[in-house]
Image 1 (cartoon, rainbow, N blue to C red):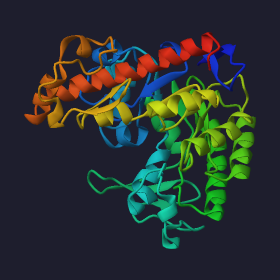
Image 2: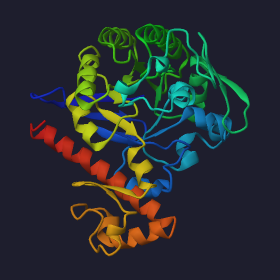
Image 3: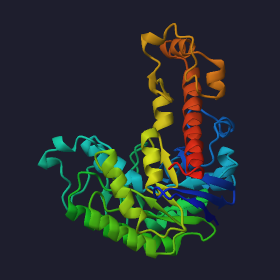
Image 4: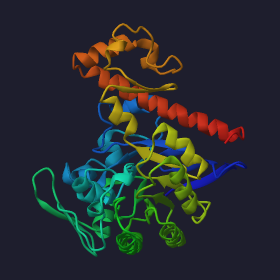
Length: 382
C-alpha cells in the first residue's frame, strides 16, 4: 500500500509539498510521471530513465492487455520485473482509450482541444451518442483491437483483474473519459457511469495495490463539484482528475480549483494527461501532486528540445553550425557532451541516436523543473 504525508502547505496558493511512500520507494511531490505506454519509455531503457531523475512511471493497461497480455507479464513476476524498473509504477485503467479510440479518433482531436470557437453543432456529442469504433455500455466498453481487429470487452471488473496481474503500486478505477465536445446531458450520463464503475472498482481491486478514483464532469462546474464530492467520499487511496481542462490556462486553473476544494486534503491527487511545462506550475498552484504526460518524449522523437528559453526545433537549418549545447543552463549529460549542430546533423541523417539524446534531455529538463517547483514551495515562493 501507500501513504502520503503533506510536508508543507503554501500560504499563497493550494500548492503543497509531499512525500508519497510506496512499496518500491518514496516519491517527493509535486512530481512528473513519464509515460511508459507499453512497459517502456520510448527509445530509453529503464536504467537511462532512472538517470534522468524520474521517480515513477505510468504504463497503459489497455495496450499491455493486448500485447503481450497481463498473463505473460505476471509470469515474469509483474511489471516491475518485466521491464526492470525498480521504482514505483502506476497503471491507468484503460479509461483514456475509451476516448482516444472512440470520439477522439472520430473527431480528430484531443481532450484539450483549443479551437472550441470553431466547433460546429454537428461536432457536439449528444446524450446517448456512440463513437464509431467502440461501444460504451452500462457495464463497460466493447473495443476492437487496433492490432488484429479482435473484439474485446473491458469494464471495471476486467480492468481491476488486468491491473492486479500487472502489479503496479498505484492503479486507477475504470472510467469513461468523455470528449470536450460532449453536451451537458452526455457529460452527466458519462459521469454517473464513471461513479458506478468507481464503486465496482473498489469492490474488485486487490487491496495490496493503491487504488485512485477518477473525477470527471468536464467543463461544467456543478458536475465537477458533484463528481469530486462523490469520488472523494469513497475510500480511495488517492484521486485522479480526468477529462478535459478547458480551452485555456486560466480556465484549467479554475476547473482544478473546483476539484481541489472538494477532495480530501490528506490524500494525493494525480492530474491525468496534462504536463506542458507551463501547465505544471499552474497545476501545482491548484493543488495537484503528480502529473503524467507524453509531451517530453513525444516532442523529443520529433526533434524538439525543451529549454529554459522555450522549445527548440533542432531540425531547422539554423542549428546546422550551432556549437552551443541544447540548453546551456541544463546539467544533463547530453547538454554537457553534445552540440546542437551534432544533434541537428543526426536528425537530418535520420539516425536513431538523436531521439535517445533528446528524450533523455527532455525528461531531465522536466524533472529539474519539478525540483525547482518543490524548492519554491519550500521557500514560500509558490
